[in-house]
Length: 516
Image (tube, rainbow, N blue to C red; front, side, top):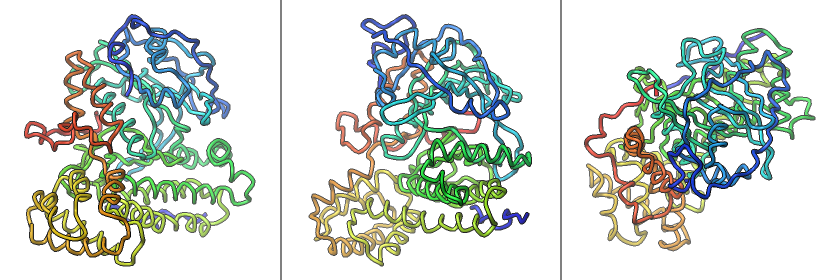
């Protein structure tokens, strides 16, 4: 069978504060029957996973619960404050109907085939039926699995706080993502670069199947199980494709569309994933696996948020190309199920147009442009050139841009004061102003629309670090405070204005690596 590898593109809040950090039931905590889970993934058969018993976590205590995710699941946040729930949310006890398992998958890591991987520190408990559909619950950090290799299967408090906060922050930004239901801590010691304490995040998603899940069976030359997995994904996430004769090519095409739209949304908000391996790519288009991520602060197309990425493979500007490359890996894995190489290539061919449409739509919204104009792409390209030359704070720049008047330069200082080359900035603003004159919307209505898509608050690295340092000193209130701010990223929140400030000098050297 012809291979398509050579055609791959080049790469370039939450719980009331009195219930946090406590081991006994908080005063007034509601006790309710634990929900019953099913586990549809477990119906596939053992080669797709291993049944695993979670490693007990000594003396666990609840640190945080997401109110939004709780209600998404039909749960009352206050009820999760009980010790009964805490024990379940770290794996010490099982939720009714739960069948904990670790899924096997393989993948390309930093562009190199890594072979078999799998859930090395994650346990899929099962899925919960809700009014909004079925959601899988997964514990991250619940101990060793057959896929842990040399690892201990634990997650540390530091990285767990980052994942908890960013999952919910991304959801509030309107970006497809796995969610975080709860964060449980323990004083149990875990050795990384230094001795840290353990934590468990309860992650929630419609599905945790990855590109690498398909790569695993392709590499094993097991077409039967490749087909079983594809049919499972179609039945659970793409049911409208089930009766199509070309359903596997159609599946690839839809995953391509979702992935293109997802990375466009990352680029628009300035999110850098940090480790876009194929085993970290979701087949339903979610942001998956929060490790060494970072938001663009000082504008830099070459921004690398992962200290382990010495060659910059996953730099900010490279993300669309990397996602496209990963899709070629997925297409290669699905090729035995697709009628022809040409059909697979046709499914992949939609990536560039889908990405271009999505990024143009997002950028028009960020610029306050209601109507499409053939000059918009050039206007956006020139803006990116200006930003790269001047390196302003990405989030602040777009938030301040709403203040620009289409009739005069009276408010231009809101932008020019943040730029090195004021003359070039003024020239671009004049061009932008001329484009705004083609719009019928008033300045005030445009400002409101721009502020509804350009966040004031993002999870800056130093904000996460501040919450981590407080938590390491057994003060969990900053997690709650920061989560509350990030849950309303587009609101002014004048009482929390300090959370919108760029990184202070002490935080300029902060680094995050894959070990996080």
